[in-house]
Structures are given as C-alpha cells and as structure tokens.
Length: 200
Image (cartoon, rainbow, N blue to C red; front, side, top):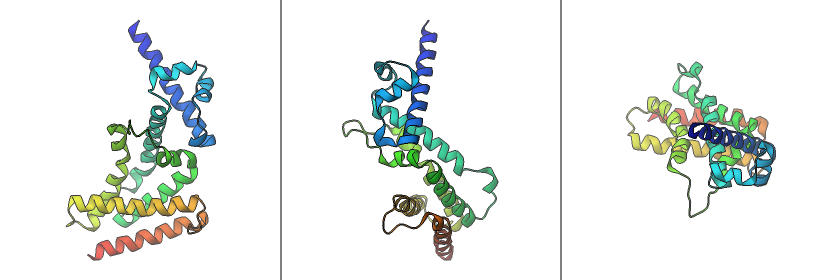
C-alpha cells in the first residue's frame, strides 16, 4: 500500500512539473497560477501542496528540469576535441540558441525569486553551477597557470558577460543587439577574450 502511495505521489509530482513547465513555456513565469496547473493535470488545488511546499517550490523543480536540458544542450560529445577557443564559442552559441528556443523557460531561471524566509535549496543552487564548470575547462587550457579560484572567478565573469549581452538583446533594450547579429558578435567577443587569455 505504501509503495503504491509513493508511486502515485511521484506520478502526480512529475505531472505537475510538466504542466507548470508547459504553462511557463507558453505564457511566462508571471502568468503561472496554481489553479491552472492543477486543472491541467486533473487534480484538486490541494493536491499540489501534497507534493510541493508551494508554487515557488514547484517553479524550482521546473527550473531544475530546464537546467538539465540546458546542460544537455551544451555538453556535447562532438565538441570535446575542439580547441579551447572553439569550445568557448560553441558554449556561447549554444547558450544563445537555448535562450531563443526556450525563451520563457530560460527567463524563469533568472526571474524566479523565492520568498526571503525560504531561499532556494542548496541542491538547486549547485545545479546552477554546472555552467561555471564547463566554461572553466577550456579556460584551464588557455591559461594553465591560473589558480582554480581565479579560474572560477573568470568563468563567472565570462558567463555574466555572455548572459548580459543575450539578456538585454532579447529584452529589446536600447543597448541590445539585433537577434540576427548576436551569434556573430558573441563569436568575436569570445575570440577576443580567448586571444587575451592565451597571450598572458
């Protein structure tokens, strides 16, 4: 009996995550409502609170799935033998393409703010750090004498720069770039950064 209950609970959890994901993908995070999600899966509103603490907890799980999809789209086996510069360019291109293809889900990764009294769980914060690891790998080849701590800082800086350009451009800010120019500009930016790193 207990096993069947656990299986039903897990099934409901996954269906709620998928329904919330579909809602966010279609209408954005700001339009997500618990009642809509539970109606989509055919359960009572209270059913959501038997598997998640609240709607914020559900969003964290949706964002976790988005991060896994982003990681899978960036850690491609076919680029392992590329030069460090080309691997960094591939990461920037892949990040841009993911943001363009899954814009609302991508935005939810950065727009969601949990309540002050219940910050994001540690396991979820660690999930966000995978990007820093895959950026740090080619940086280590470009600057092998750089300390691990400094390399982690440099990876964050590089991610912040690429993310910033992508974000302000997709938001249509006046300093943003036209979408059709983004990939080429990111390529040139990475080439400049890599050349500077290799020269040190």
